[in-house]
Image 1: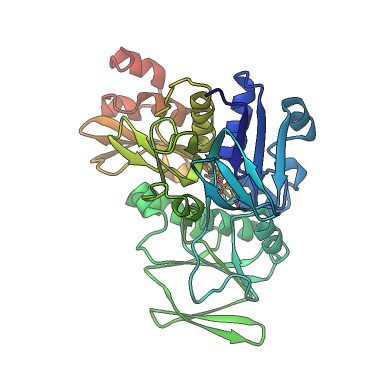
Image 2 (image 1 turned 180 degrees about the horizontal axis):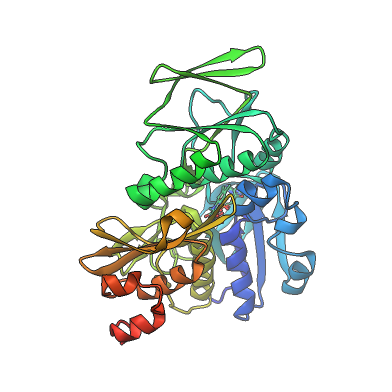
Length: 410
Ligand SMILES: Cc1cc2nc3c(=O)[nH]c(=O)nc-3n(C[C@H](O)[C@H](O)[C@H](O)COP(=O)(O)OP(=O)(O)OC[C@H]3O[C@@H](n4cnc5c(N)ncnc54)[C@H](O)[C@@H]3O)c2cc1C
């Protein structure tokens, strides 16, 4: 069947990438994005960084300018939730009333913050951070001198800690693991990140949890499992996200750590796709389904789904890549460090300007860099290649030249 009318559920990075790619590839039918967020599509990463710091506003983080929307003839229905999907007829029931039928449906429903029972969303002083409205509410509370606790020392929690310290707040991070970011980076680089925050004055409480919360006259007292307590004005819970799969599972689609799709984003139901944070996609190189929560993945897989909608089979199995900004540092990462048996440092950790290559039996498995994004670009191309450790660490040797010498490019 030729597709003339495509509905995309969601207005985030994956939805907008799908729409843009469809137009770039010459699709001339209608494209409608339907999202429950009341705002026009916006970028999420600045919500814990520039926007929160007051260095960006709503318009500077928009994903589409009005001109782009008009030129590309993309319809966006913001503030409208899709309550039900009938996969056989590809019909969406809308919270605004009525329904919408399309030739193909793309589910780009992303996720929502994982909540903790001690911190009910909407309670005074309690914050979660996923949407523009969450960030706007939090931004109002980031005043110098205020006391902020962040539950969860993952990337979002630590970006937030950095932003809040820069704004002059007293910040405590409560992390259940022995080190912040350890599952993401391994112990040595996790320690480097922890030091950045300690040096900036963040009170890091690792191996800790909140056992109870007491309301005080001027805020909250968090009683920690180790027996200490922290008095704060506000708490942000940043303990990960839960995928928005309700629509898909109610429609009978397979859900297993995300909506299960093939390498091109197709569900088992003809004409129904899923993409972005919510999709569990088959990866040929991993030999299993993977789900990735980064912008680069949302953008790339949006393009893959657009091609599949146009009948082109072009999976993109690029390794994961993401960035994070904390204080004045730009951090980038690619690959998967689990299973790595060696870490080669290029540069000096003490100078906070270095890259680190994770090797597994001499082969490049992952890379991390501080203010050296170009080394991560290199590593992303070279994952799986074998390198001589000493040469990899030698800053006088150009990495691309090294890859030629090692035969990695062959
Ligand atoms: C604060 C923050 C900082 C981040 N920083 C970085 C970073 O530095 N680098 C990086 O790579 N990644 C970062 N990320 C992750 C990145 O933002 C996500 O990977 C990306 O937004 C995923 O895009 P998506 O379109 O799949 O999902 P989302 O952006 O979650 O969009 C999904 C949309 O669908 C809507 N929706 C859900 N169900 C329905 C329904 N039934 N009807 C209508 N609409 C619905 C949701 O409300 C949402 O608006 C960050 C995330 C956050 C929250």
